Structures are given as structure tokens and as C-alpha cells.
Image 1: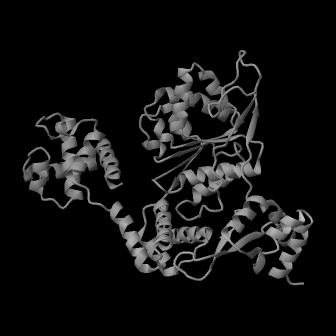
Image 2: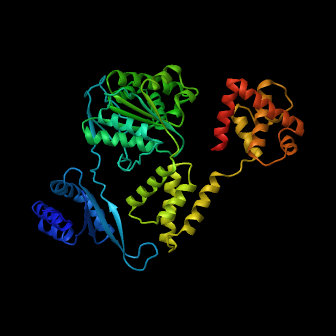
Image 3: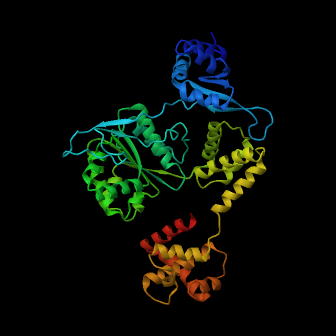
Length: 475
């Protein structure tokens, strides 16, 4: 017998009816109408957004069991939510929202000795004094693999992340270092690995923490003379996820304590996951012994998403928000926002807000207005003042020193680089550049540009200066 939406939903209802009170069944399940069955995906219509949220919060387990019985393990549930006067429409509008299909993450408990030198082991996340240390994973279940769209730009990192989630500590990807530019999904992927591990191995203790918070906890432990407790606490973690590990640079004490924690975890088959906006080779002021450990496992880069991936990301975001938008608008946004995923999603959020609050229809014109604001912000012309500040900061000097008459080699090179970038990145004349950078003439600027070109080809360290400054000034 061929299954239909009605037949599948009726079977689900008979199972649900046996498992909840009659009043609850009457209130929350009788008003639901089956709409469509497409493969393993059943679409049901609910009367309101509140109705959908209540079902997701209180009955998702029951719905999941009922659907799996009828449609198998790959069963999916999609809600058609009846929205009154949504956005600019005067008639009720139906939006499609997929079920999150996941339970909230459970608290984790770790057994510790009741007496550690006759005092409690201190958990830096909660007030101490408990014999059973309760550790919140700090994970966000909304950042999962289901809504992390795969493309050529992130396939290696995503696949490695899934391998780690399937066998934490048991692959050669330990540590797994995920690196890439701003807004490309490093934090999302790190959370997704942690969330997947908690789904598959509920007994494992997973902890996500930013390097800034880790550093602050270490400083507090030194002040309160509980450094050993701090180390012991982190050595009990099964999966440690540290975000933005590049911020450990220059913090010798924190690097030292992290080195010992890392060694203990790695030797005991525990998984370490790190994220950074730099590749290990570009990290500065990080101890060599720590850098070499970062390179032990796999360093996977997240690159800028290509056009097809950007379209998929936008479609995924719209689907999850229950919003319909024409392909023409989606393609326009994808063609014009290329820098990062966060900006792509930001445009969609702005579109929904404009349509909702200002009673505007989704249109190409509205998309152009919003995209223009985003693109203008990212393509702002760099000023000569800004270039001088960035170059001075990079070489650890002030702007006055950069503009001075001194002939010290490192200051001359910094001044020449400032002139070189001013010529490359602004439309200012050579004479004007010279006047603004230390009252030089146009011939000096021309000479500076030629010198920079020559040194970039012949001097490896100087080429590194140019690359670093290009990145700083471009972003």
C-alpha cells in the first residue's frame, strides 16, 4: 500500500494518543493537518508560531519516535506555520520551518575525589564546594553539522570534523586545528563537532571555551593560589575545544599551563580541537614547543566560499527561517557578498527585518539597497593616515617616528612601505603622498616604491612584511 501524508499522520496519531493524556492530545494534536509526504519528509500544518514552538519544546521526542516507526531512521518533519499578517501581506501566510529534531544537551558530571588535600577541587566554571563537579559543555546546539553547508571551500575541515566526532581521540586528527578568515564558520564547525560527540557519546565530557576566557581563568587561579586545581580540572576533560587560540600569543604563563594540559590530554587519548584565524606557520609569539604540537594532527583551512556554496548557504538560511524569497534575489546577494558567511546571513536578516517592520515586499530593489550598505563598508577606500597608523603599529613605533628624518634602517623601511601602500591603495598623487608622509618629494616616493618591489623579490623577511600589511590593510 502506498503511503500518503494522511495515512502516515493517522498512524502517528494513533501511537501518540496512546502515550499522552487525552486533554493534551486534544489541544496539541487534533488541530494539526497533514499536508504533504515527500520521501521521508512529512509536512504538517500548525495554526501558529507558538503552536510550532510548543510542539518542538514538549513533544519532539514523541513525534520523532512516531515518525521513525512509520518512515524509518531518516524521517524528517517540516511545519507549515500559519502566520497572520507576516511581513507585508494582509492575508495569512504559510511559512515552512524544519523541525530541529534534537534534544537539549544534557549536563555532564565528573566524579572527583571528595578530598583533594582536604579541600574541594575547584571548577572554574561554577561556584566551588560540590563533590560532584557539574560541567556545562558551553556548546550551542544550533551550531550543528545539519546547518553547516558543505562546499569546496570547507570540505576538508568539515569531513575531518565529522571523522573526529565519530571517533574522538581515536583518529590521527589530534589536535584538529581549524583556521581561516573572519566569518567563515570556524566557531560553527567547532561547536558542531562538540554537539555531534555529545549526541553519539553522552558520557564523554566535552568543553568549549574561548582562549580569552581560558586565560582569565588561569590568571584567577594564580591569584587565588589554585593553579593545580585549574590544571587538574582541564585534565579531566574528554574533548577540549579552544576557540581563537591565536590570542594566546605573548601570554607566556597561559601557554605554559596549556602546554601541560595539552600533553596530558593527548597522551591519554583525549581529543583537542583548536580554531585560529592564522595558520600555525603565521602565528607569532607562540612558543615553538606549543606550535609543533599544533602541527601534530591536521590543520584544515576554511576558505572563502565560492558562488555555488554562497547560494546554498542563503537557501539553507531561508529554509530554516521559514522564509520564501525569489531565486533572482538570492543570486544577486550571492554574487555581491563574497567576503564571508556572516555577512551573507546578515543581509538575509536585514531583508526580513525591513520587510517585517517597514511593511516592504521582498524585492530586488530592497536587496540592492541592503547589499550596497554591506559592500560599501567592506570596500571603503583606505586613507594615508590609516596606512601610516597600521604600518607604525606593525613595526611597534609611533607615527611621529615613522615621519621623522632619521636614517635608521628599520624606520626607513617602514616609511618606504607606508609610501608603497599609499600609492597602491589610494588615488593620491606622488607629491601629495610625500607631503603627508614626512614632507618628502615625489622622487622619494617613487624611489620607495621601487625599493619595496626589489626587496619583495629578493628578501624573504621583507616579503613577509608586505604580505602581513596587505592582509591588515585589506581587511
